[in-house]
Image (cartoon, rainbow, N blue to C red):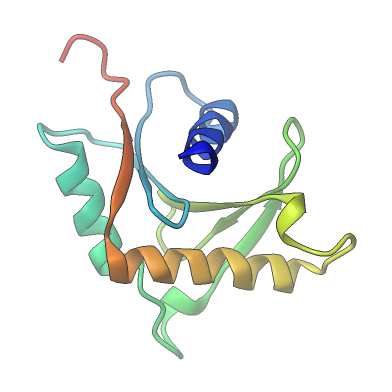
Amino acid sequence: MEMRDSLVETWRAIIVGEHKSWVLFESGTCVIVMNPEDDLARQATELMRQHGPVHAGSPAGDFSVVTLSKHPGWVVTGDHPDILNYVSPREVEPGAPDVSIGLLGRSKRHQDGEGLKIVHVEDRRGGI
């Protein structure tokens, strides 16, 4: 529970755009819901079902690592721009290369793409 709460606070701090709704999965994958409909959880689950699992040789295996400037750690992106993973400095050795950070983030996305267990929904539509 404490780790989940910490991750929720981390995503609140690093997501740019106060009106962006998002959904957090069990292993820490965050799905930004850019065109929110009635059921944010359903939308995020569908995105994760399609783009979460990593298949060797497919675009799902690709990733980029973004070093955060206002928060410690990194965000790992993949083939879908609205699916993100956070990697804390506590999860890797000091000076870890981007490839290690990216592989960790990608593995979290894969776990969430297989498990599809939502732990938090942040509805920021305001009044809808």
